[in-house]
Image (cartoon, rainbow, N blue to C red; front, side, top):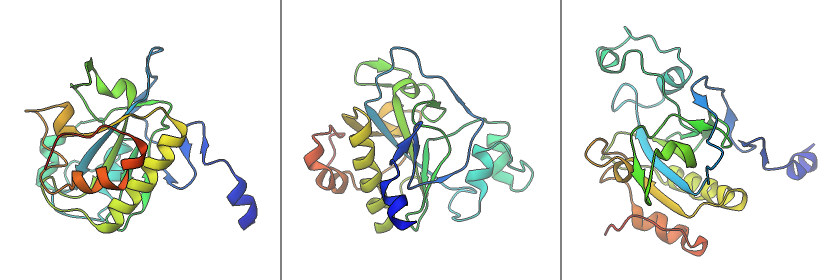
Length: 195
């Protein structure tokens, strides 16, 4: 069975074999002209600053109890998703096929194009915007990025703060862009200009 799993394709219909699959209803078709060349890195924790609550999954699957925490009133009724979430321990969950359009970037503009959801892959890191992320998350993000690069024409990685400046601030100052640039240097991707 182990040999069978090793031979199984890494991608099937935009689903990543190395991720736990949880289908979100919050997605749509990509436009016919979409060229999937951007990874958008986000951060999320629900409630803010709390990890491992299961509330991210409930939000992305429209099952969040809006009355369970006072913060949820601020996001009541939101229908959002991301392609992937990387937990603090590095575990990857996929909510939307990469061949489909997830609802993660909102109003956005990057590399001369609007509507980044059309041609990007969204990856959420479990954590509070501006805080630090774990080594396991960086390792998982690097491995996932390499596997994405082998299957999609990715050329750019940016934060939500870069594609929606002034509106979004994640992943924030705690994210180590230099570390990601160094880990993925051989891919030839473009990264935000940061120290």
